Length: 369
Ligand code: HEC
Ligand SMILES: [Cu+2]
Image (cartoon, protein in one colour):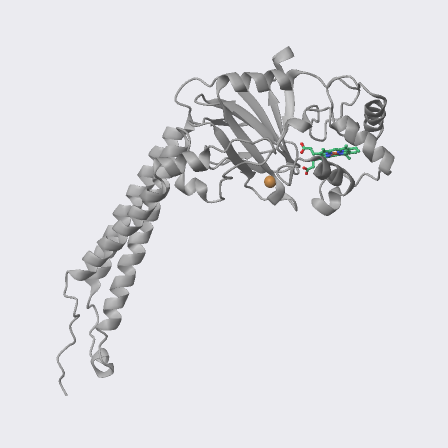
């Protein structure tokens, strides 16, 4: 029996055509979803009165939008790498398809002689080597481009990773310009800010995907990074090095604001807490000094603990406990009394409070705006 070899009905040129079409489709979809209108909508996420952020970015939004001179080159690298990898997958799938389609009959297969088809191996290896080397060089170029900010940083902040929250120091070593906050970073839009990264315990990693790559925070070492956003808005950040049970709840937010708004925020953060104005607030303040001051600081009061977030302006933050809860009065009181249910294993104990104590403390905390 000598049946004619089956020939692909598509003809020899069609695999290439199919690949090109698939690749073009992928590229078009990517480009369409990154149109400027989509970008502005997802990235600009102003806080509204109720404290919720409109258009909160989705976790993978960083693949579609970058918002700064450090993010853009990385974004393009992402797309090109994805394009190349998808292209390779498609080519291999098509070749596999052709091989299956043109499969030899069993008796013919036995007749295959050694050494046949080796050219394909040489050509394939050659193409792979060239492509991988090209990618490696391109990656190094991108790394070099984003290593330093395009111009002098406007100022420096120090970010320290703790299990499981971030301490943020502004104006460190600058006397009356220094203050400490937690889990919320504000930067002026359009200028680079230098970030010195430290750790108080284990290795953490600081990552604001839409603005920058990842940088580790290592005990005993000071690493550097810089942040710059082209557009005002909120950019979510996350610890990206596993650091213990609550690693997933170690998020933070970066707010890029016009300079004047940033200056107002800075001035407000510099102020200490107001002196208690009512008897209830005064009782709450005393309770805080007794129960919480061993760990927490409130500037302008006697509380000066250093192992936990500075609470002087806790009311000004959108989220509580490194992105775990939205900061509302109910959530705040729930947090204080049920820490270990909300964020099990975290380094603050549940605080047992009588209803009267809870009322006093709540009244006091409400003054910390
Ligand atoms: C043993 C130390 C300790 C004590 C005592 C303590 N806390 Fe905390 N507190 C922490 C730590 C650590 C965190 C950070 C938890 C995290 O996010 O993982 C924290 C977080 C918080 C936060 C969230 C802060 C933020 O920026 O999101 C609030 C609010 C808070 N504590 C209030 C209190 C109050 C009020 C008391 C007293 C009734 C108190 N804490 C007692 C250690 C303590
Ligand atoms: Cu972590």
